[in-house]
Length: 477
Image (tube, rainbow, N blue to C red):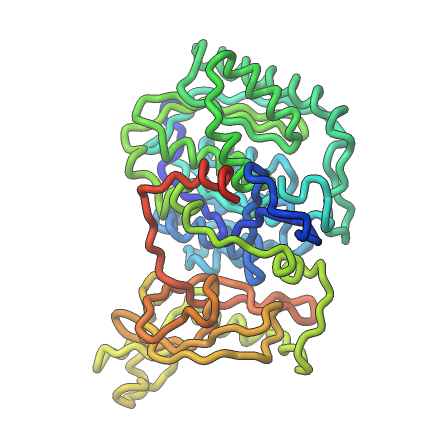
């Protein structure tokens, strides 16, 4: 199997973290070492998180490959969510787009990445009832991988174990998972996980590995598997990461693998074990190019950049708290014909570049906004990966979004073009003229059962690689 593996990978953690879910915090501060959960913004969902993880890997998706989206929380039931991701990435029409559903879909997508050379994102947005015992133990994230010859990691062995078990489930139309008593299911999942791990290690002819990462929807099973597989050397990097993000559903195996690859040295071995509705075990050897295979910021840097979110704000974002909004009619639903005609602008943020003067017109048009020549703007250029500089900012206090106000900016794009867009992942008062911002694909609103997606602007990232947020998140929040 030395010719099967991962060539590139990326992880995406939203900008927010929830550390306290008490409705009445008057009793004192939250426990210092309590768990935290990664929280997607009010304008994020599985599709937008998958786009963020995959957009860095777009160059690794030639025609003929499959684009896979693994999730348990797709925003549409009968519509293929991967098709929207495909459009936002601007992939070749020859690349098929397929959804994978269910708690085990993240491991299945990873299997297809390494065995079939697919490109996949696993993303989940997990919501519990307010105050649920595992509310802080669930989280939102995405991870993406591109298959190939093993530039990042070579697959040495793969083993699976399927068992039918009623552990986590959700009926059509329901929003929250139902969970059986974890004490009953932990023993079953731990046994399945040990069986898969031992068979994978035997196939790889290894008695031990350099890194062990365990993902399980059942925290008792995860703890038991970590103890059994690590013996007296309890490396707790994956457990610490999970306490900083929560269990991120279908994305969790990929998120843990991405974090392990961030730290792995060429030649080191990694056992990835996912125990959910059975078990899936992978044994990888870090490739010679693992150090430059990551696309986008590391998991550690993304943890460091997160903003602490208040519980009331979280409840509003998730629609778990019914709050009176402004006396303003709902935004109109987008219609299918104009969405199709304007797909280049709506999904890929394409402007038209004038063949006469070279200026970029946004939205794209037949007449150049700079020189007025008609028919010279047939060339299309995407602005989604460029930096934009704010030239004007105002605040909307009558927004239909679950925020009291949002910033609306006009920004000039480096290389040409001007954007008028909502700002996101930043307090409205912090947006200033001259601020550098980058486009991010988000959901604007949902009307008449139609999700309206477009591009917003967020502050350009400035990661600090000297921090270790995994330990800080546990010790200070």
